[in-house]
Length: 233
Image (cartoon, rainbow, N blue to C red; front, side, top):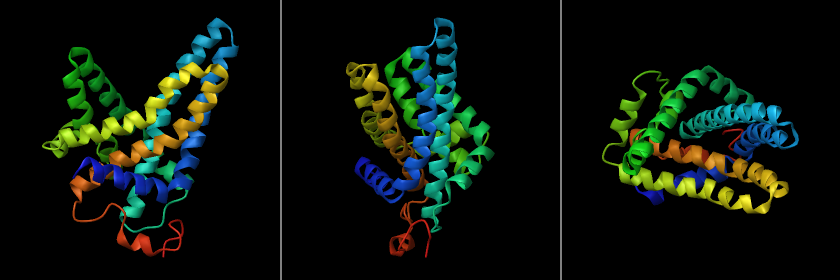
C-alpha cells in the first residue's frame, strides 16, 4: 500500500461515483452554508446562536457525508449497483449516533494530541482514521480506536501522508478564499466543499479496504463491465 495507490483508487472512485457523491455533498453542504451565511445579516445575539447551530450542523454534516459515501463504496466493492441516495441516508441514520460518537472521540483525540505536541496529534490522526469506516462497514460501537490503531500499525507514515494530501486538497483553497470577500467566499466554500468532501471519504474507505481486503480491488472487477454503475449488470 502506497500513497499513490490510495490516492489513485480514491480518484477512480470519485470519478465513478461522481454524480451521486456530489448530490449528497451539495445537499448537506448547502444547508450548513445557508445557516452560516445567515449570521452575517442577523443581530449580534441571533448571529451567535446561528454560529453555534452552523458549527453543530457542519460537524453532523461531515459525518452524514462520510457515512453515506463509505456505504456507497461498499456497494461497488462488493459488486452491487450503487444504492439510491435515500437508501444511503437511511443507512447513515442507522449508524448516526455511533458515527457522531466516533467523530467526537477522533476530533478530541487529535486536538489534544496537537495541543500536547504536534507529533502525537499527527500519529493519532493517522492511527484513528478508520473509525468511520469501522462504524459503517463493521458496525462497531466499542473498541473502535484500538481496532483502527491495530489496522494502521506499521502503515502510519503512508496513511498520514495520504491524509495530509487529502486535507491540503480540501482545505487549502478554503484558506485562501478568505481574501475574496464575503460575497465570493460563501459560494466558493459551498462549491469547493461539495466537490472535495467525497474525495476525503473515499480516501478513508480505500485505506480500510486495502488493509482489510488487500486481495480484492477496491472497485470490483465486475463493475468495470457494467454499462452503468447505477444499474449494475
